[in-house]
Every structure is written in C-alpha cells, then in structure tokens.
Length: 440
Image 1 (tube, helix red, strand yellow):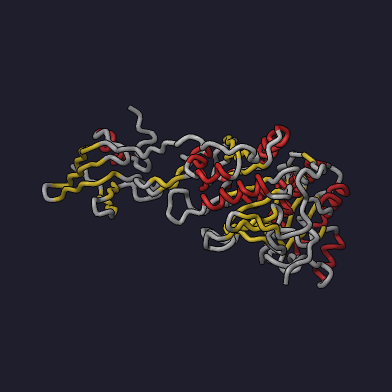
Image 2 (tube, helix red, strand yellow):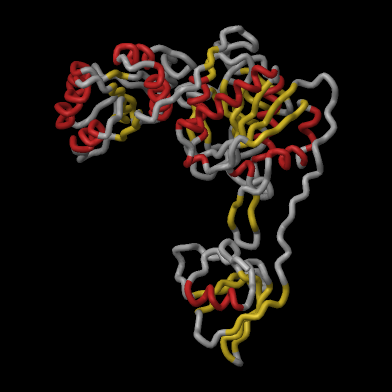
C-alpha cells in the first residue's frame, strides 16, 4: 500500500509508526504515550519545515495538539477519514438567446477549496463546479467551460501567456460573445497585460477574474467576482482585455480594470486590485454594467490583431541603493536582450551604473526606464542623472507600469531583433498602456 501522498509532512520514524498503523491524514486515531496519557483526535498533515518529531492531532474541541514522538508510542486507527466530496449539480438550464460565454480555467484561489482537515487550500474545484453552484449565471449567459491548465499563477511563464492567447483566439473564431479567464491573483496583472498585447482590440470582452478567498469561505469574493466577469464578457459594449475584482471591501461594486493598467496592491484584501494612473473602464453594480470611459474599443470593431508570441529574454530589474554594476553585466552575459528598470523617483539609478549601462546599450540591448513610484510618470529631463541616462540611450517609458513594461518588452522582443524597431514598439501605445494623463 503506497502512502507517498497520504501522510503529508511526516518523515522518519514518525512516518514509519503511522504507516505501520495504516492510518491516513484525516483518520480518527488514538495515540497512547503511556498508561496515563492517551489522546484521541483527527490526524492532521504537517508543514514540511516543522519539527519532524511531532504528531499533530485535531482534538474534539477543535484545538490542534502536537505530541512529541517517543519510541514506545502507540497509534491505533479508530475510524477512517471521510474524504470531503464535492458533487457538481450539473450545468444549469440556459435561457434562449443569451450571449455565449466561455470560462477558461488556469488555476488560482477562484478554482480552489479549503480542506478543513488540514487547513490547506487545494485546487479541487473545476470551472464546471463553479458554474453548478452559481445558478444565477444561467440568467446571464449560455456558458461553456474548459480547463487549459491548473497551476499557481507564480509558476506562469511567457509560454503560458501564449497558450492562453491561442486558446482565446480559438474561441473568438468559434463566435463566442465573451471569454472569462479564471486566474490566480498573484500574477494576474502580468497575464492581463500579456493578453492585451497578444489580442489587441479584440472583438469581444476578455475578462480575467480571480478570488482572494476560496469559494467555500464565508468571506469569499469568488462568486461575486465571477458573476460580474460573466456579465461583462457577455454584455459589455466594449472589446477589451480587462480584470474584474472587488472595488472595495464590500460586495456591492466590482471594478473592471484595463488589462495594462491594473496591479495587485494588497496581499489578501478583497479590494487588492486597483487601476493605476487611470480610472477603471467600468463598474458592475446591482446587476448592471456602468461604462466609465469613452476611449474603449467597441465590440466587433474589425480592428482585431492576434500575435501571441513572447520572448523569454526580457528582464525586470528593480534599482536599489548599493546596486552593483556587476548585476547588469551578469544580465548582459546571460544573453538577455532587454531590461526594464524600476528606477527611483522620476526615473533614476546610481551614477556608478551608467558606464555598464552604456556598454550594453552600445551592444544593442534595449533598456527602458519606469518608476518604482506607483503613481505619476517618468521624467528624465529634470535632473542631471536622468539627462545622462537619456544621453546614453535609455528609453523613458512615461507612465507605463513596470510589470506592463516588462510584458510589453517580452512581446516586442518576439516581434523584432532590430533595436530601433523595438524602441518604436515600446513607445507606441497599443493597448492603453501608455500616454494617459496621470491622476493627481
């Protein structure tokens, strides 16, 4: 009998004893330390980095107890675990003449549930499961669902951006009226920017949506976010790549952010996502879409451009006090073809870095400057350091977010090897990523 995944976190002699007792995580067990010490409870999993000499039980009163392992300890299984089972109710019946919306699953908390035996969040819900437990979606759109992949968003690479873009393009060609991407929140801003460049001026809304808290928690934001995303995908008058997340901590308004202008600003709050240097393109409130901007690409505008190629030779580098030019040299030697620098203030780095930056610029490496400040724009003509950076060939990127600039550079490097063409691409507004007036 294999226990490779059944005794998570247990190693060594402790694991041997548990295996001998044929127990599993979640089983009710009795542990006898000596005649005067007996404990009953649910066997819990353990973190890999925790002290290996403890067995963790959840006691009947709800508290967890760590029992130090001893050679003569005895473990007896009292009852087997009843694994939590989620049974989809099946897709709801759709009303006729509703727009067709496809939900593409890529992973993340919005497609996860908490395992209350262990406290861990696990990706066990499929997108179909989410549909079946939100019957109100049946009155919004005729829904379809597919799983592209299930992964933590921090594991995504330019390859996954291309895969998402190609899958969306397939659905666009099939004639769907909108696409929703269920995505992990940690790098959702990067993916939103990537899809904005790969799918420029799309004929339909492409809405990325996530959740800060899993769908079975009382404070979950997954249902309200997903409902808003489906509504926008199926009914919004614009064709844009956007992100649908809570506007505030309450559930009354969902903000619809432009894909190149949004970032996650809080680790756990439901209103973590904010538009930077601009306003959201729309809001969802009381079942209605409130369009907030006039400069949006309209549905079926006929201007759709599909180009899903990205390069892995772009790099995002944050300047910090004490940074050595050896870091830049190492990047150069590793074959990177472009660097986005998060400079200080208006777009500065230490003057000691300028000679090495000039070397890589002379070698045809693109260097673009953004700011570490969340709001405002780069202005490298104010101080002498900025002017010297301009003089050696560093490209100022106005008010573009560093993350968006990195993604755009990855896309630009896949379009051309000519440095002048890359500079032109980076300075040309393609998806609302640059050139707007900064807010006060």
